Length: 339
Image (cartoon, rainbow, N blue to C red; front, side, top):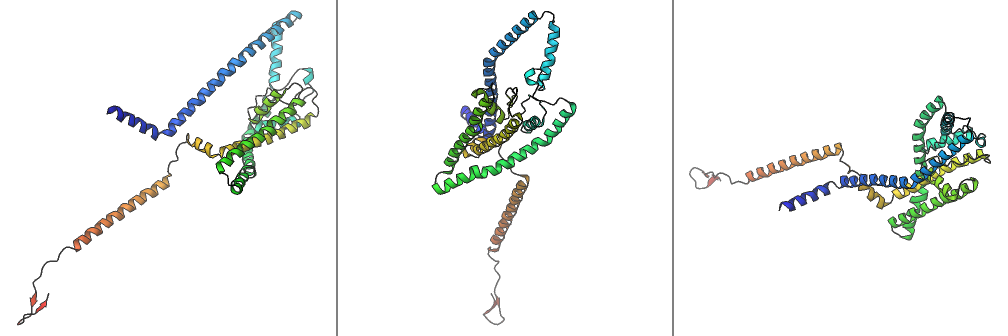
């Protein structure tokens, strides 16, 4: 008996807090996914890192053996300065001295990466004034960019998603959820072809050191706004039409980001995903004014019920029999004067 009561109480507790349990499982799943990613990245990349470290140590030792007049301390000092400058996008190599990081087209490319939060990191402000302006520019520009992208995506969604789905549903008589799923899949395939496959083929042809996988990797890292910065186009030695190339990349990033947002918004409007999201959301609480109205209605209903009860009692009192009164008889007659 006690076990059945305990099991019933546990079932009621779980059912009454479904959203909290779903959210707990969501957090647990996310943490496990992070750990899974860390394990895979560590197991795959750690051997390559160790190999690269050994190669660098070997190259450094051979360089010192061939140049005995140079001490290891002086070499370490020189390499530290070179690496620090490289972190800001300045290279001491002869084949990179012709490329400026802060001409107009490069600065335009940098501004687009800041506003879209891509942030490759290959170029960074060198001066204190540039760093201060970058902060102010980002504080204003990032919300401005979000507003701009939201307005653009909202207008594109009308023509790319809502009207086609409504047209097919109305004229062909197909189920609207089914049409929405098929449309989302087709739209995603078109976006992948136009903003990943074709640009990857173009980048692999224009960039001498990139293969197709590396080009596709750059497209995905850029349009997902991850922006690792290990691959940046237009930085090769003697890049032809570098200014136009940088402007074209800037336009590609903005258009590709808009396309990705349209695809994501299309999938978010699917009924199946809406129901899935609701599993992890808190239930909407009733507003305070609505509660006050309900309380007022409850009080009014109670008052009316009490008033009705009192009226019923009065009616019952009125239906009780009257007190008998003797008939008045006229003097000298047998007929009653009043009954």
